Image (cartoon, rainbow, N blue to C red; front, side, top):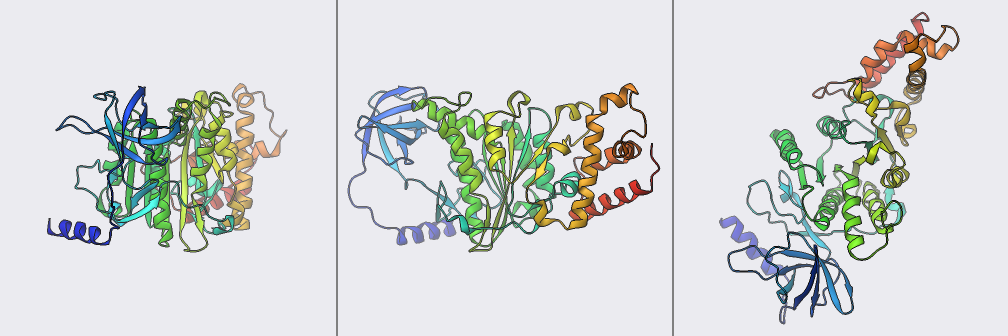
Length: 449
């Protein structure tokens, strides 16, 4: 308690004095989660709070626009207990959030409030919620391999430190499980996990698995489940990015995980449609798709501090449609993507990675020539097996017609074993490359099927 009082006194001692009254306004209309407030000219991004009956939590809202001299605010909670004429006051500094080492080992919501049952977080460092706008030359090149602990990814779509990669799949194909394996198997100084718009059960399970032991002291979890307000979900994703940027500025190697990018786009769509923006690509307003680009571009290497943010994002392909606007937009700006196949998952093969459809755009820079050559050979074999699967099952293929397919058929069982991996198994990058080399050496000595 004494340490807490000392921290608060030190913070107040260095704080700039605010002279004058507290600006306030009144609620004049409420439409769903959007309210209009008159008399309060607050900047966009300002957090506000409405007065409520004594003993009850006051609803919070965020300024998202203005129209006709009135401020448009979106509630961060429910509209219950709101009344016409209720006073609304601004609080905090617009567009800034608290970050710092004090968040390590904690789980918070989109406003930075703890949800893990611990005490309040007294962080004095503030960071822009939307990040700093930096020069393109500030982003350093990706030249160092990143070990994610997944054999198929390490060997065939090698990732790099500072890369932005997406895990693309439909619902129920294993995105969260693959992400869980990558978090457990990766090596980073700091891990910032954003669980946005997902099931609350997944949040509690993730915290139980990863927020224990030594790893807890270098992990931050920002969780906003699916039943929360749209702007709170968007703020949660932005807060996770701000945390990662802060630690990168300290020269740290940061792993930023965002599950899922599609839920962030859904939240941006809700806000944009509430403000009257017309829908464009399959109902997504332009600003909703632009928000994806802004979030992805915040990851990467810093040429100034030497730190890095390696971003791993899950992307939900609605209806398994790979041409979904969110999937298309994400794939265009990401440095690579790992595609999960429902057909492969239905065979009971996990992780259900569609190797021919997956790609790492930085593999040429982070893998040596021998590794890349062996990976290309194996990828070709896997593509040949998948393309001719029906013919092989019917017995319609005649051996000797395609040498590549003959070699793939001779190694079909070892290839399937190589691509499979148990959920709790961790295969390092060095072991993955060595096993790939052994598999391809075996292929050269194996007689045709």
